[in-house]
Length: 340
Length: 255
Image 1 (tube, rainbow over the protein chains, first blue to last red):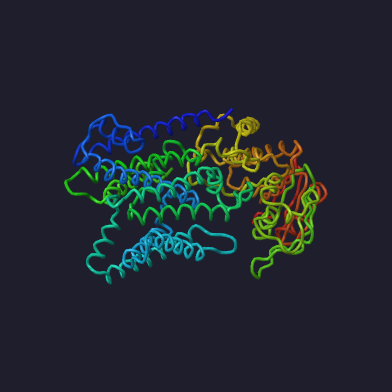
Image 2: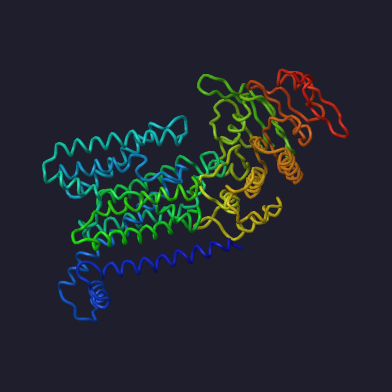
């Protein structure tokens, strides 16, 4: 005998998979040039299996395979990564309104990536610096808050805010000393966007996000227990400090990967876990896949809007903020402060 | 059977437990009595390995808990914290299912038997109808019953409860104590920390009185829980009298 509603949750996850497939297909077809469904399918089959059934032009191939496909897949991984990070931070800190920025992780990653842009010593330097500084900001926040085998949430959030603002200030210093081209690059990158995405980015981020997702899903029951607090975790046989470290490092790692590739995309880590929780509840065994797929669909839609709304492109970070900030307000007001 | 031998514990400079030696017998309902800050919670936390014991030993069925991992310990001892507000909207059955964590196996760790155990414990505590309700929407008494169901789902031989009735109305307090009595009658050892000596007088088999980190007295209610002990604990005079067929504790002077 298992819980009957769990079967409905599974069905809903399959539904989201289909929805993601449809969203990605439509997004491949639309843009400045509309490519027909047959041509799109033919281009993809040709690239993947050297099998083709329609006579499309080379321009369409460049548009679908070289321009749209990588940025759409990058959107999928971005949605998955930011949603997983949101779910993990919210569960670990037992606070439904924290998001990947609360620990200063994103500001740390942003600073690291800016250093990488300013001093391009080697390939993947931007990613590496982003991860190093994200981990650094996390370590500082965590050790500032750590007292006698415990990490009180209030201290953690406070130290996160302090570390975050220090790194934000340091990004401003970097902007101040950078030349015009670099400044433009930093500013544009920080607004967030998928336009730079290459197949190489897709591969690197895809592997990272895939591995972390599987690991987190495998440990999702332990995440449920951790959200009950340290003492309850211990009394149920789960070592809180060890597993908190595994979860936080994994979430920070994928946040840094994504931030260094597509810039800061705000609100997703807050909004998507909430929506997913409203549908499937708090059990992370179902919440993690639901939030991941929902996040992927959401980012693909936002990125497509960024491409098609006006002639030139709107940075996606602006779109997610415009939708996300009022969403939080609606969430808080409509449920009179009672958040899922 | 829990044996505590020469246990001392200090937070920084402050000594909270001072050379405590104590034996908690199997299958009985034990009440832990003491003023605020007397060391009750610290004693609990030492037994549950929340705090690291350096001075003294705690033995459970003859094994020192220093040699028992927290995973193994969670199969022997269950714990009900005083505060169990949830940040997220969990269903009652999901909360109770968490009690199965120490017995996890397989990919996600839970199998069909675990779900059956959840329903049987909810049925035992007569709250099966609450299974699909959000935990945060329950009344205080119902929440406490759900937490007890979670402890039972853990299938341990010992349960520690930290002030389970402190936030409840009078009828819910009695309801919880009746339930605890019923559970202890099935052979589970229960240790309850409480601030109401009447509850201990009415429902417990044994009392453990603690003051300033030292054990004042321990033993069965009829011989140990008397007016002198109450004076030693609370530093005020209390009377124990028989009313009808019940004993009752009340302050000697109301002003």
